[in-house]
Structures are given as C-alpha cells and as structure tokens.
Length: 67
Image 1: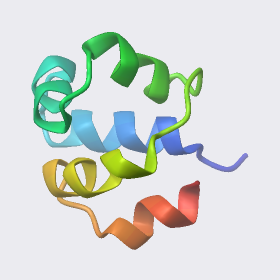
Image 2 (image 1 turned 90 degrees about the horizontal axis):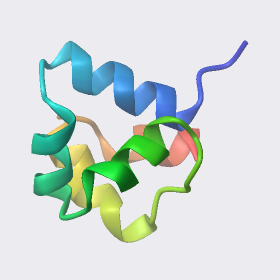
Image 3 (image 1 turned 135 degrees about the horizontal axis):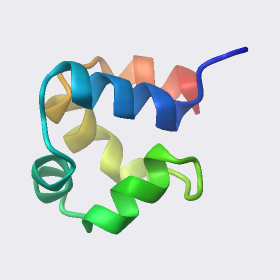
Image 4 (image 1 turned 180 degrees about the vertical axis):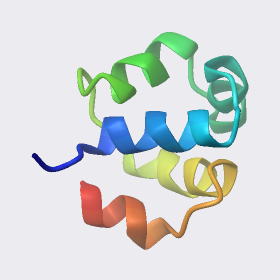
C-alpha cells in the first residue's frame, strides 16, 4: 500500500519530534486543520507547502509528488 500525503506528513513530524501544535503554528493553520490533513480528511492547500516543507525539513518536490 502506498503512503498518503497525510501519513507522510505525520510520520515526518513525529520523526523530528515536533508536536502537532508547533507545526500548525509555524504553518499558520489550526491544529485541527493539520490533524485533518494528517488523517487525509482535508487536502493540503498549495499555499501551505512552502512553510510546511521548511518546518519538516523537506524538499517541496517531495510534497508535490505525494499530492
């Protein structure tokens, strides 16, 4: 089974030891929005990609490839 974008984001966040709240603050979204993204209940807004990739120390193309 292929990893979804939400699973990848959650796995990377936990790998870095970052709390949901800290990532949400950095990306300027609510914790509930980030939680929904991680559960694949909400799509990632393209405007969030820069700050999310920076926060999770990822190349933007990695995220784009999972969308």
